[in-house]
Length: 582
Image 1 (cartoon, rainbow, N blue to C red):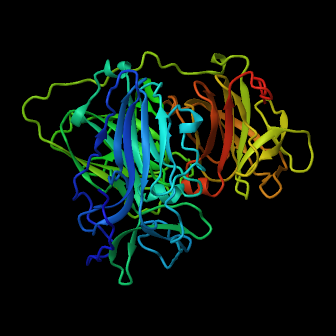
Image 2: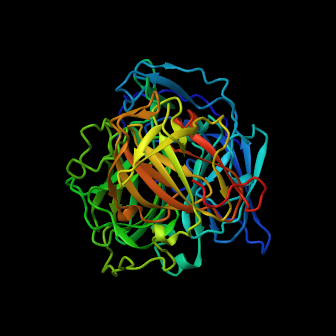
Image 3: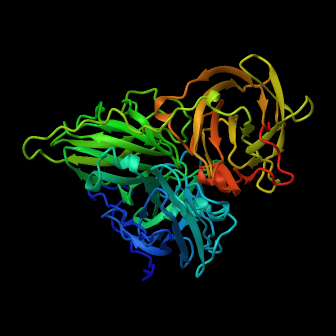
């Protein structure tokens, strides 16, 4: 039954909210029926609904899967084929106002003097992407294959991949930022026997936590109306909101047993990066409590302790985390965000638990953990010393001799995502030096969505993609279809690069190599590419074929042109390039 939206009446309160007064909600779980060899079927509706973001606010209009914010958590077993009917039942215009406000106001509550845009003609046109899923191109949620209200897409998910925490969200062309912000997102968990054999915390001790930031609209008296607000700054194309939601509540609290718990974290924000730090009642970091056991693509070989500086999650990144509360009985702990916005990719340069000097978020709170008092002796459960026996850390030597190479450049210009091809010196050629000091010239082969696809991958082949960031801003780059590993990062001097001409004088110069830190050594589908760095990743494009995309997961950037197609086709197709392409 579809809920009818209405405009909530204002509440008599200013632009502040009391934290930790709402208990953490848990999204419902959908498990497809087991039908032998036949695919299990789920029908999931995108609906207009009203939800409570905070007890002091009126109900907030949203767009959400099955009316839940976030959407239901889909849970499947490895190799269990799932067919989903994604049904568009949205009604009315987008359920929020959008404004462009003066510089320096992005993290402030309300409009900051911005004039609302007219969104009345924006269609409720949806395309669903299961982020991180290895699927055929016809079920990947191609951004131009959207459906209008009253229509549906029927996609098939083979789930032939290791246990991992994925998520699903809207991916409609040029509308993703608006529609994910409106609420169209949820988690997607794949289970397997290897994971089950570890006896990790489950049931009430496993929490799926979807984190994102929001802004709230204010009336002419500066009072909350309850409606969401999408505010960007003039000259800056990202959304940052002052209020952090966890599972659809602003700054909730969770009652936790003094036990080992498992947290399935997803950063579902449009653009905000989080650096999550756990603090005690005195505001000091709590050491030796958080352990990452998995990344975007599943379990690591062994747990990695989270340093006191915190756990960094860019938009779309996930972390599978064990939190050991066995020694924290009766305590109240607070999870806070200490990352700057925009996030520049620098390590923490301030005491743990304190916001960066450049951080403009007035409210660093994320959620509160209220650990129950012990009822008798607590049986100690150790964090496992070993996890996935099938996990293997890749090196370049592990790749077959025949593998492809791609060079991508991120630039602050009208062509921000550039596919580069080697070329001799000449106009528009950017020279890039390598570790040996030798320079290679590159020209732009494609740089807009309208340009023809230049990346043609032979199915089942390995490729190394190098993504060089000359834009001055961190970008999380997501590749559809594959999970990859980060081989390394390289640091460059790009002071001579001119984005207007695409040339560099002097050449973009290699400075040093950064080894992949332990928290990023697992399988990934989204990589943070920091300014003046090159991320080097390796992936095998296996199991499926078709037309896919890769893009920046700052959603406003994606909608503004930071997305490009690539094609995966079987070997032997006439006209396909060979396996060792540069």
